Length: 433
Image (tube, rainbow, N blue to C red):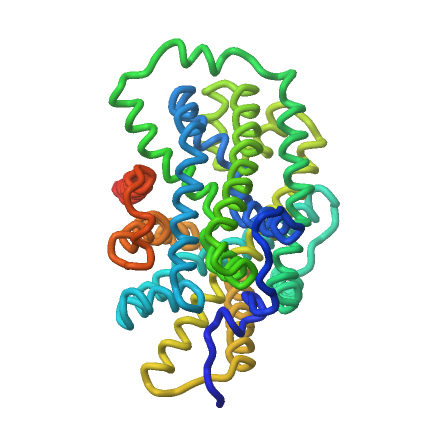
C-alpha cells in the first residue's frame, strides 16, 4: 500500500494529467472530440423511445418540450461543470467533500454512484439482448450461450476502457458519426410519409389542466434523454488541466455546441417520426413498449429499418455505456478512497484501478447473464438522484460556496431549479399507483 491519490488523477478512464494549458481562443480537434463525447454519452438508446414518450401527449406539449430542450439541458450541465471547476483539485466526489464536508461528501458520492451504476447495468443487459436478437432474427444464426456472449461484450468494452479516458472519448466520438447519420437519414426518409393527423389533433385543442399535466410528466423524459452528467466531471477536469483559468468559458462553449447538436438532430428525428404516424399509432407503440424503429419497421413494412434498428441500437448503447462507465468508476473509486481515508488507510492507484475493473466486469457480466426483471425499477429509482445532483445541487452550491457566488443572480439559475423540482415531483408521482 502506498499513498492514495484522487480517482480522477489515477484512473486511466479519467486521467486528465497529460494535457498542458492551452489557449481557449480557437476551436481545436480536442474540443471537437469532447463535443462528440458529450453527445455520445447523452444520446443513446433512450432516443429511440423519445418520439413515443414525448409525442404521445400531443402536438402542443411536444412543441413546448422542443423549445425547453436546449435551455434545460445547457444551463443544468453548465451548472454542474462550474461546480466541478470550482474545486481546488479532484473529481466531483472530491469537490463535494471540499465544499460540504466529509459527511456530505460520503453521502453525495454514494448517491452519485447509485445514480449512474444501475444505468451501466441496464446497458449491459440491453447490449446482450440486442446483439442476441440481431444474430437470431436478422442473421439467422444461433447466438452463443448468454453467459459467454455477455462476457465477450463486457470484456470488449473494458478493453477500450483500459486504454484510458482519451481513447474512450475518441471511441465515443467516432461512434457518434454513424449514429447521427442514421438519425438524420431515417428522419429524412420518413418525410414522404408525413401526414396531417398529428396537426389535426393540435387543432382540436387540449384542456389546460390536461396540457400542464402532460407537460409535467413529459419533462423527466426530456431531462434524461439529454442527460450526460456521468461524463461532466471528467470533462470539467480535462478542461481545467488544458485551459487553466479559461476552463469555464471554454467548457461553456463546448457544451453549447454539443447541446445545439443534440437538440437539432434528436428533435428533427422526433418530429419526423411523430409526423409520419398518428396519435393512435404512437399510443399503440407505447402500449407495445418497443422502440420507434421497431414500430416503424412493422408499420411501414420496411425490411431496411428492421435490419438497421438493432445496429443503430448497438452503436447507441455502446457509446452510452462508455460514457457512463467514466461516472460509475469515479463514484466507485470515490467510495473506496473515502472509506479507507476515514480509517486512516490508503490504496495505491494501480490496485484501485484493478479493483474497479474487476468489480465492473463481474457485476455487469452477472447482471447481463441473469437479466433480472428488477432492472427497470432500479433505473427508475436513479431518476430522482440524477435530478437532484444535476439540477439542484449545483444551484445550492452557487448560493453557498464563495468560489461559485460569481454565478449567482441570473434567471437561468431559477429556471434550472424550477425544472429540477418539476422533474423530481413528476418522477415521484410516476411511482404512485
